[in-house]
Amino acid sequence: MINRYRWWELVLIYAGMALFLTFMLAPFVEAFMVSLRPITEVFRIPYRFFAEGMSFANYRQIWISQPMLGRWIINSFGIAVAVTVLSMCCSIPAAYAFARFKFKLRDGLLSLFLAVSMVGAAVLIIPLYKLMLALGLLNTYAAMIIPGAAFTVPTGIFLMRSYFMRIPAELEEAAYVDGASRLYTMRRVILPISAPGMVVVAITTFITAYAQQFLFALTFNSKNHLNPLPVGLYQFFGHQEVRWNELMAASIVGVLPVLVLYVFLQRYIVAGLTAGAVKE
Amino acid sequence: MKRIDAFPYLLLIPALLLVGTIAAWPLVETFRLSFTDASMKQVQNYVGFENYIKFFQRDFWPILGRTLVWTTLSVSLKLIMGLLGAVLLNAAVPGRALFRILIMPPWVVPVAVGCFMWAWMYNGQFGMISGLGQRFGLFSGPFEFLAYKQAAFISTVVTDVWIGTPLVSLYLLAAMQTIPKDLYEAAWTDGAGRFYRFRRVTLPLLMPSITTMALLSTIWTFNSFEIIWILTEGGPRGSTTTMIIDTYRTAISRFRYGEGAARAVMILICLMVLSAIYLALLNRLTRKGRAK
Image 1: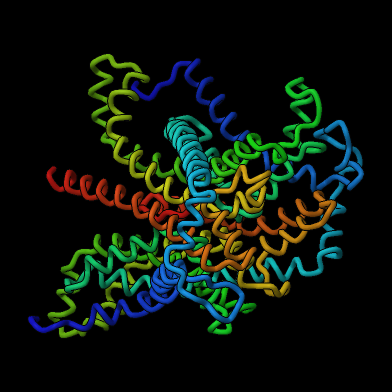
Image 2: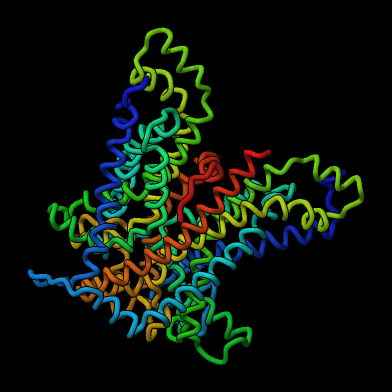
């Protein structure tokens, strides 16, 4: 039938997939292999994929040579969770307003949020730095959480708005007829049935916040115990001789939780992305 | 309900407060700062267009050119790879679900961690690419990818493509799956082959999504900071210094806030042009959608 593939088409498809995956996964595979090598094998010429003396020793060593590692991972998660909560507290009511009510400034404000979503945080880094300085937030978690949340709000609004718009308005009208106030209707009628949509937005926001913790932490924070994982590991980089095997072991330990989370939640994530939530 | 209704505005307060303080106010402040000589010093004076004039006389054009080449190269590669990925994801073969899980990790892990891995891959003495390249006779000796101007330029693009491709793939896949099945069946009944169906049915119907993604991707890639900063910090000898890197270095590394702000304003102008194109396109697409 229409979807039956001839044998050479199948070969082509699987070859394409294999090539694609090689590009996507090679850095992970190589990082894992390096993390197993002793340092003498890391700096060895010529290069060998399977080195001698591979073991998980580095996975023990990193906790000793980088005593902060556990703290950084917890910070990363904590910051990403806080960003998600703050961002959603702002985006959900705003999205509901944009989806359901007609008001004078609606189109103008919607364009404003769209415009903000186009500007990268790095462009605004100077006034942001001054703002954090003036508010006394430098070297605090807040300096990483508040800007992180602000830049995810527009995407959250657009996603939740399209979700709310698909809910039939008759539901609210029925509640109003029964004498419910608008706040009550929103809280008791609309929000509960929007839970699936909110889960999707929450997960996407979390992944975004987890992936992009570098700039704000690098610029606004100089206290090592407050650093998220990426900036913590970035310090490995500063040394004359990078201990690549330990850096890779620490990287893998650091990203493993979110990778596991991703595998379990990927259905929601895919749904979120394809509904128009986007992140770079 | 004729009088002004406060309820929607109340719902908007948290979002406006947060986004206003963190994004809208800094936008205005950037413009103001760009006309001053602000630095670490306590005093700052208004200097008119001096920062802009200096920027244009010194290095605006080469940096703009480099940024445009870097962005164009990266976005086109992401679209080609993304389309290829979407086609593969759409193929109804066993193992497709696993393939979908396995292409996403570059997007899921923190950008910085992905960059650490690539920095190791690009290592000339001990890295994988250089090592395997030597074994198969591609390079005569160790090749340090991040030490040469052009190689560093290409290397940063490759890493950016690696991070950006999964998302483009998924987005285009979603768009592909909205194409009605009967169109394919009609073409199939008329004897159209698989490739012909792709060219005459899939591609034309996918065009709006490809264009939207191209513009969004251009805006994000234009804003890209972490990848270049971690891999090369804009070097060697400025060969990967895009507008964002240049602004960050001027303002944060050298503490020249005024000059940095002027450079940031030039970025904003570029972004405005891109956004205007995007919005015009979006309007046209929605109008078309409504006309149906």
